[in-house]
Image 1 (tube, rainbow, N blue to C red):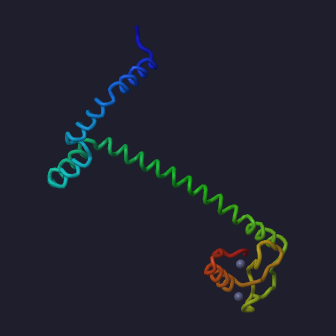
Image 2: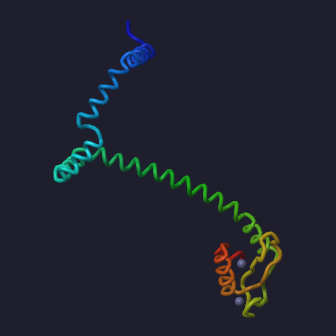
Image 3: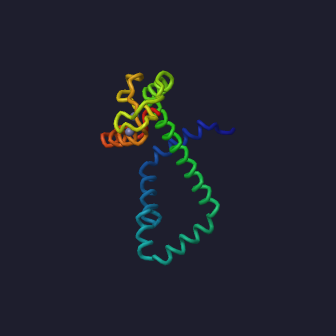
Length: 165
Ligand SMILES: [Zn+2]
Ligand SMILES: [Zn+2]
């Protein structure tokens, strides 16, 4: 009669339990036999030329495998980067909701026509929001002064982008 998967697993478990010491000794023997990582390292240090040849042989013989592994790594990384970007985009959008809202409201309700820049008195072509929470309170301003103001904001950790134009 054929064994079921459970029966095989059960048997293996029982065997492992009954032969704990034996398995432990086998594992130690395996470690000492020269296949352990530290042994490999020591061997590589003693035989740099052989190690080099081994490496190049390995990459020759496993070219396809290496290629696939590399590609898998690339895909995994890509996924992580995409996920991160998505997360940051969301945070950015949330932070900017207030700002975008102020910008849109001002654009619709406040015309710039025939105004002069508050700072240099040149013709104004942009709106600046001293406070995004008060969307209809704007300063009329030229693009040069606007840039200057926002680079000052940047130094204080604020936005680099003109708030409204
Ligand atoms: Zn501004
Ligand atoms: Zn100006």
